[in-house]
Length: 457
Image 1 (cartoon, rainbow, N blue to C red):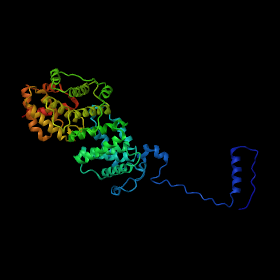
Image 2: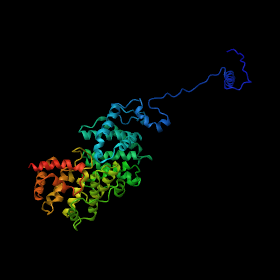
Image 3: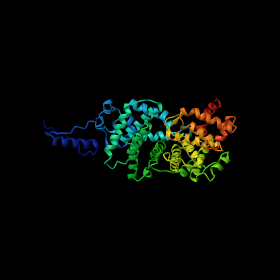
Image 4: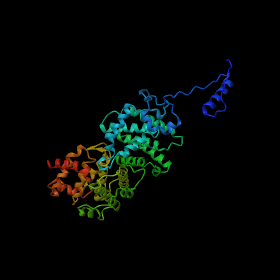
């Protein structure tokens, strides 16, 4: 390369002149040298910058990377691609859409809630929290969708995502993340799935694992995510109601939740003689307090001015009442000797189940143990002088835990007690039922249907 002279006016101090001088000097200095420059790393499908990994979760749905195909569901040992490189495939989008538009209203009693928007927002944040949450959330939503709509078997995609979530939990068992919220959510979901499948042994194993994890963490109170803590507590109660075991945890924040709702400590409605009967020497003070709280909740919802609750506040009340009812008398232990205590206890349990997984008039969980105890107490209570508590128990059981096969004897008992109390209209019947814990939005319509069937006998 021949040398040449370039004249640069050094008296000028503008940027272009300085740049030309530097360029000329370096060109002379670097003549004959070969520079080896590393190739710029190609931005692969699974390669994201640190900043993108940390704060790019909101853009995950816009990613154009491939979604795992069916072979991945078999090769669970295959290294997982980073969470943020997964896109929402059509299957995933359909699962989330179905859950948000239909199924979530069965999980949370939408008729009693202000809005489910905050809960939906919580789910979206949870999905993109980390890989474990991503897989667990999609599996849970898919299985709940299948359960609610009666689709069998569970899709292979749901099975795959659950397998990946479990694999990730196992990978973290020897790390500082072993007791993370994501891992707790996965194990809690395994208990829920087993309850749906009526797999008592599997549910018991997973619940013990969940209890151990929380014990190592310092208890349920250490779970700062309120919604997750309530899910775990509700699962614990659900297991106890299904299989008659004591509860593994305890959470009672009734006063705080009632204050948030502006709910009175309790409200007395109409038939004061009913409450004076309950306050007799035969009734337990602990049960009476639970009765007051549940009745106060029902009256609050029946108030047309304030009939909607924040979903988590409502779940807080359900959990608080549920734990106290199971502590008062486990369904696996013999019923209390006092018929009145037994009747009100099982009636309140039946009331509680009407706030669980349900849509319209359809119930999804079968509480066989609760139904068996209720039948036994109804049979023992036939000789009680006051038939009103028994009538409430018959209706509450009929719209909650009793099966279709129970309908013949149930309708017969309703008719017999209706005649004994000289009830001639549904309006009269409703006045009696509303003396007890009763939420119009949930209980009146299905109960009226039972009444109309009983009248036809």
